Image 1 (cartoon, rainbow, N blue to C red):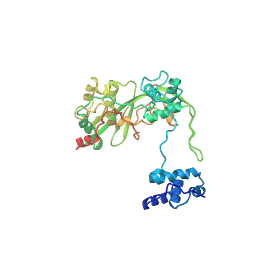
Image 2: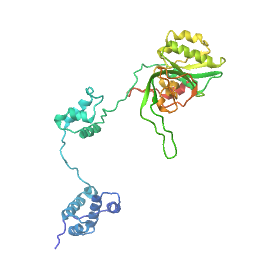
Image 3: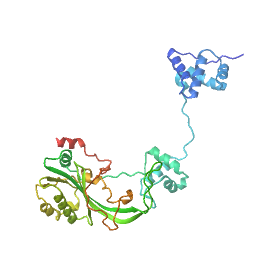
Image 4: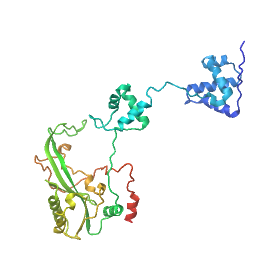
Length: 362
């Protein structure tokens, strides 16, 4: 004869609604659905043995959940915290890992890897995978590096940047805006075997090996409003080469136009030998040079593109380079500016607010 349980289950309308929703759920864990069904059956007056047979669980399981639901309600159907297995690697190992990755770099590698840390702490018996899990919990990423630019605070930065941006946004009447920059030590290469061009059913195939033809250096200017590019090869990046390029610009541009040059603060641009060169071209005010803020690489559009066919002959089967050090020739061309990451800023310093530059423009 079955014995009645001393834990009588009673519910209210809200509890019944929650339990019935659990029994119909298709996403809830099976253990929660079984507990809800057991609680409903207990409230209906079924015995523990009948509920165990209906659910296919042990009799003691039904007894446990009847007792918890009868004394604690819906919260009693949740799992209780468990002690679990004791931690194999204590605080000492965690501190050793932190001390390792925050100390000097390893002698044989550029950065600390999980395997290198595990080898360093071999006496603890820790594995590389466990090192990775501990580093993830501590939000330590020794394999990543972020650079920044150490620059002095310039109170006139926004005003000077606005001057350059205004030239980029709107070209003054009877003027041309040019961005000038140098690119040095580019590898001049060509493929050892011809590239097989694309055809139906076959993509373009390019030979892996290439020949080196030394390096090339160029100086280029970009018309920021038309996209026209003028490129000249140089042997040395000095004031003399820069002055020669200024004279080339002077000859290729209508004398009636005022030239606005956007330059960085490179040594060949601001040297004592360069300043007289400005006067020997068109002179002031026909040629203007807005003061570019130090470190503002993004202000130069010419530093954001690579002239096609000027440096890497391996990039195209039809591009040809000479075997001399200077592998480029002067040829106006139009190219699409490439993306540039720009200068990096110190993670803990506040970057320049573009809204201030926009306000200075107006």
